[in-house]
Length: 77
Length: 184
Image 1 (cartoon, each protein chain N blue to C red):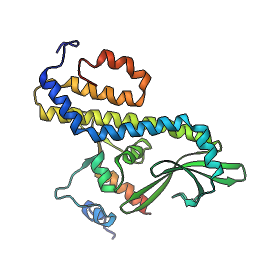
Image 2: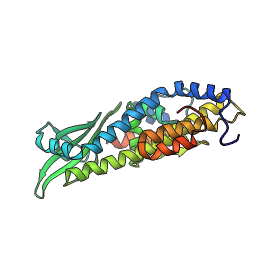
Image 3: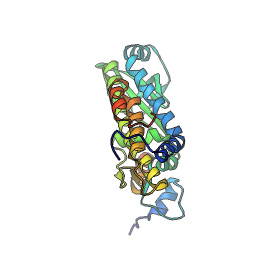
Image 4: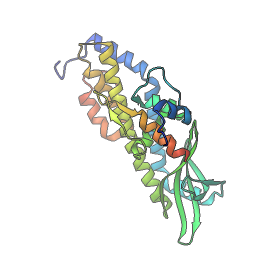
């Protein structure tokens, strides 16, 4: 039976750096650093619905790690 | 705090400190606003340039081949191709992800000016999204740095700065009545 790789294995497969402590979500700047693009491009991806986001208490945009992995997997296909 | 009260020295200090901390954000934000303004001002010229320019061939991720026309912003170009229904135009973004390049069509259509207008309108939405996020970051930053202090005046002055960069005419009147004494 095929096993589903855990999030760390997925991160290694897609080339994402593995943080010392696994985080569920990242700021736009952190997401941009992980993807290797400018943060304005990340806002564009969010506006187009390519990256789904959630918000911190004060309204700061957070990008779930799972969304970053999903985007990179889609792009790699 | 009274709405019309002058900011306290601590609020002035927090404002100055936040200005320094987010200086790069402000600079980048203003530069991107300027790019969108320029695009809106030169729609017809840019559309004409794109048609006349026989650039290199770009294949987008959906498998369609386009001829590069003119660069609109860094990594974003207006491209065109010949179809049975006439010339088709597309705004294409190339994103150099660490795992490989993504070439995505942002807007497309048979009228170059309309395609550019759609793109400019979308970029305004992106700027509003960015404005909201930076304002939230400023709020988070000052509340961590100055706990239990009312720093809403600092956050508001930042919000006004960003809003003014997006739309000069709309915010001018607001900034005079809502800056609450903090230099913006």
